[in-house]
Image 1 (cartoon, rainbow, N blue to C red):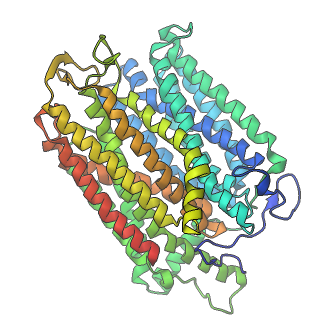
Image 2 (image 1 turned 90 degrees about the vertical axis):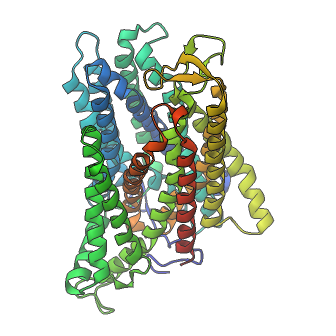
Image 3 (image 1 turned 180 degrees about the vertical axis):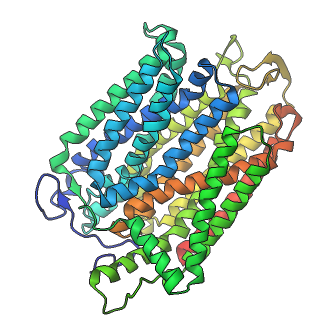
Amino acid sequence: MKHGAATADGALAEAPLILGGQKAAAYGTTDARAYPCVPAAAWCILVVELCERMSFYTLAGSQEFFLEHLGFSLGRAGGLNATMWTLCSVLTVFASWVADAVLGRYTTIVVSGVLYVLGTLIAAMGAVPGKESAVCYLTGVMGLLPIATAGIKANISNLGADQYDTRDPAQKTAQESFFSVFYCSINAGALVAFGFFTTFASSGGLGVPQAWGYSVAYGAMSLCMLVAVGIFLSGRRSYKLSPVQKRSALASLLSCLRSSAVAGGSREARSVCLGLVLLLVSIALSVAKTLMPGDGNVMMAIAFATAALGTYGIVKPCMDPSWVCSMGASPASPPEEVREVEDVRAFLAMIPRLFLGSLAFNALYNSMQFWYQQQACQMDVRLPFGSSGLQLSGSFFNIADCLAIIIATPLIVAVLEPAMKKSAQRPLSHGGKFSIGMMIAVASVMFAALLEIKRRQAPVLGISSNCAPSGVSMSDISGAWITLPYFLMGVAEMYTQPTLLHLAYSQSPPSMRTLAMAASFFIAAVSSAIFALLVVALSPYIPNDLNGGHLEYGYLVTIMVGMLLLSLFLSALRE
């Protein structure tokens, strides 16, 4: 089978990789049947992801509090935090180019890990009591950290998946399960960060004074990443590595788009190019809005319009990318040039599925990100619930989401999926898995809506909530109830996110896989811009004091949007 050809299930054929530390080796020298899911080399890769996510969420989760400690306003601190998240997403495109054409995936991850160590160390130095420095801190967190995060995120899951030989049916099945284990490692890191280190950073503990909390927490993350890089390096000779490409996937894509638009006169190619520009404008406007919160909603409305038009301009023509051509390409052209065009077509054909799937789930997931915490803050969050003056923060309940993923992963991978495969006499399709996750996510949001109605009907306690806007009191309903929507959303993630990761990997040509992973993060940034306007549009129903509004309306709108996008996603899969 030629390079880049599709198999019966829509996945793309593999080319042999190079075994690390050797000039060449046959692909598939490790027997997947010796381990049901994860080979030894992939565990070294998973450790990097776990430590990176723990470090990232520790810094991101405490950033606003530390900046306020330095004298930044609440709006300014929140804007910088949102900007950091956006930079981490957008820079994955640059990281994909570096990995493809300059350093390779392995070296890109090593360099990014070293930058992570330096970035967190510089942030720790900027948080030393009595010597706090905003310049030092922001150099580490806003300068080095986004580059390091992008370099790891764009490459780490693909490198793990490369350790499997999908020509072996057992390894092919194990590879798909790997993405579930990979996503579990993300949330294991997040659980430790949110469950301990973010609180430790702001409050100290374990003999560390409160004043030293931030510096010690950030220093611990630097040490953690140093250990992770060491473990990653130790597996060097065991990794199966893709060689550096003569031309990056990004360069191939842009070249084919340019040739199709200019030489081929393709309207579809011009639409995709314009769509990319509009999406970049949308992300830039969203960042500007977070940094200038007092400038009204016009900028956010423009960001939404450009995001929506840009998404349509890309998705519609990519449903059938037969218009893609290359300058002078023909059946008689060199094999490399013909293969490049074929790879770009296959990549663009995958993009609508990735776009629609990501937007469908994020419509529901962003309800948790934006509203569950706000809802929890107006419930009785005293410790223990209802009998003490100590209060939990609404963000604390994110732990239920992480715990759900950690608990659900072994059940799904080892019990449920094999049982469903046995019952159906075939593995669940991407569409089947994703639909299950979406239904669970709908149940999560629906329960949150019903809970909000019950909360608003409950008596107001007259006790101010520490995490709600000033002067807003808690209602007489236990905050423990909000853990169920969080938990359900975590289970939904286990059916949707690994599915999208595997879809992007398996339905992209090997030469395009790093760019496909970068595209998924880019799309996540776009979905945030789209949802942010939805929040603004629904603001009359969602005031600072939820007792005077109807938050459930927002939940119902997101369910309808999510279901519409799910139907489009399933249609794209059938295409």
